[in-house]
Structures are given as structure tokens and as C-alpha cells.
Length: 195
Image 1: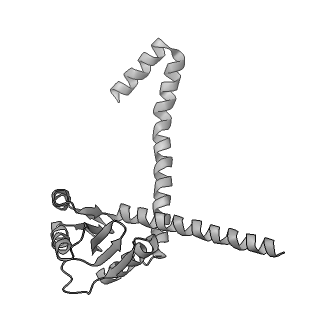
Image 2: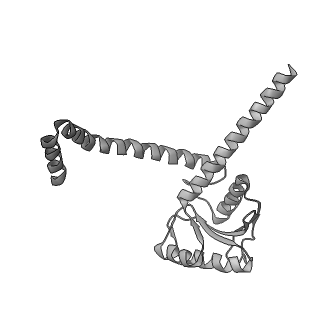
């Protein structure tokens, strides 16, 4: 705080207009940050509601199997390719397999109220080998431990946390809105041409 005041005094001495601008900046920056934070919170809240359309309930209890099914549906709607949900047990650390244009990808899905640890990365690494996949991911509604991040970095496993999951929801929702608009335009054009 001391240096903020010193900076303001120096600005006033050098150029009074600059001093006024400095004070306004110091006063209004926190206000702008609050406004920005509120917009971000509203956007995230809306995305969490949008996620319900795909069966992902960030605010409610989901089982691991529910999350696997919801994530698979989200990937289908994203257009990722052929999406397969593996059996519940004996899946070799893989819950969802996607055969797409980028090759085969395997996903370990973890619905968690806490941080997802290194075990999930280890499991999907083994699953990647077993399924002869090109890419391996761990996806969660939550976040990852530092150890999980470190192992993922050295093994090439991609980590998708709750933020990435919400981004994916946003992309799918946006694409579906565009497709709906295009459909409505085509129908309107056909109707206009028939009249």
C-alpha cells in the first residue's frame, strides 16, 4: 500500500492529469475485477446447468457408472467418432474408448468430490497399452493431485479436469445451437420457396 501511495504522489508531482488517472485506476481496478469475477461465476453456473443436458450433474451425486455413460454421450455429441463404454469390471483401467480421426483414445473417468490421484494415471497407462491406443486421458469433474500431474506429464497422459469438462460442454452446446439455427433457416427457405 505504501508504494501505491508513493506512486500516486509522484504521478501528481510529474503531471496532475496523470495523477488523477492513476488514482482512478487504483480505485476502479478492483471494481472491474469484481465485475469480471461475477460474469465468470455466472458463465460457469450456466455451463453447470447446460451439463445437465448431457447427464452430468456437477451439483448432485453421481455414481462412477453414471459419469462414464454421461461422458460417453458427451463425446458422441461432440462428434469424436465411435464411442464405446467398457464393462464395469475387468476394463483394464479404461472406461470409455473412442475410435476417431486422431486414432484410438482411452479414457479413465473419475467422478470425485476430492482430487484425483496418481492411481488413475497408472491405470489408464496400462489400459492404453492393453487397448493399443494412441492417446490416454483421465477425465474428472474435480481436479488432480500434483503427483497425478507429474506422472501424467512423464507418461503423456492428458488430464481433463472439471474446467476442461465444462469447456467441452460449452463446445457441444454451441455446436448444437448452430446446427439448430441452420436447420431452422433451411426449413424457412423451403417454406418460402414453396409459397
